[in-house]
Length: 481
Image 1: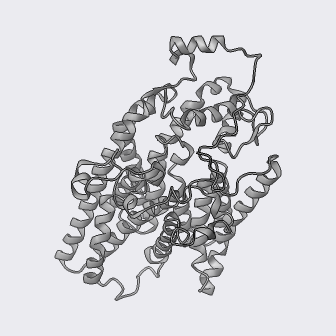
Image 2 (image 1 turned 90 degrees about the vertical axis):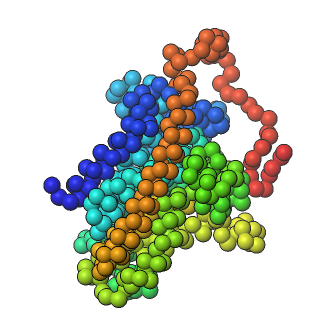
Image 3 (image 1 turned 135 degrees about the vertical axis):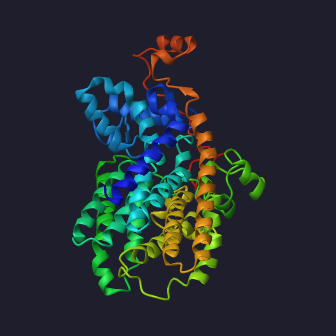
């Protein structure tokens, strides 16, 4: 068995063990539970299930704004997945009853999928296969996207989006047929755009910025242009299709939240009080309450590896001789990837707008549409530990003295142990709360009171609830308390 296959098999086994430990009930009975029924929780199950059962158009959602309907991109209906499941329901009608279960499975199976792509990325960075497997699983488990299910944004919990484009970008570095990468980038970004616009836009930005960093070098610019063209074309096509299929006008240009749901140093370096571990509470102090949209925690393991890295770089002096592989591995891909993630982290901090340039946001197209910039911090949450693991492995391979090798091993093992410890506490929190609520779309799960309400509903009566024009959180331009 090849080293690559060993790493992937080990990653899959470790991921399955993590799922069995923390998410066994949701994995085996996905259609019996709703991860969250508060806030947007019930609505985001409803939009998916309604589109599968009742809609006849791929681009129109008829379950809201009757009799006009709504464009499929806006109600969190996961257009790609719900339209595909609608096709399955045309062949197997019972699929309509399994929509909640499908969403739950997509959420929970994102963990092993994320780990597999991270493992492939670490292999591209020439990391030993055992370390690649263990590191990939731990980084996948520590992602803050795993919490998005509890926040009722199920599509945003598909945490393998960013790892998939990381691997795609690293793989392109050694691709002999570079235009194949353009095709794959176009396809991958397009798919994520039609799952959730945030995911697709983040995926596109990762590849666009990463490819754009090669502009100073003529040779690199020619090689990476296809990696730029693929996601750019996907964004253009997505926008053209949206414009041509959206029948509504007057959509807000300034959604509420940009200056409220951004990353801060506190949210980046300390976990929220609801899911902090005992050790983090002792070492980092009492964590301040945070808005769920701001959760951007890196983890104690990553923080430790960052803190130790300058010492090892100084001692090992890794730049004193050329890369024996000609720059095709770590040194070719990781620096650009790390810079890309740090640039997106600045956007997650709402920079530069939050630092005295608030008015500039009103005149900045595209960016002002993203009401929760903290979501862009998800990239650095994957990239930083990924690069650190590869970097430590690289330094360990070059260490000439036993003391240097053992010091590197000790720091890396301690960092990974802290990741495992915090991931365990994080998923205890997620796993316990993911199965608290029954699937109320099933008649068998309804209480007697709920059944009575359903039976008394008049199907021939009103088809919509007309709300008074009242905004709690409307737009930056309009807020009525």
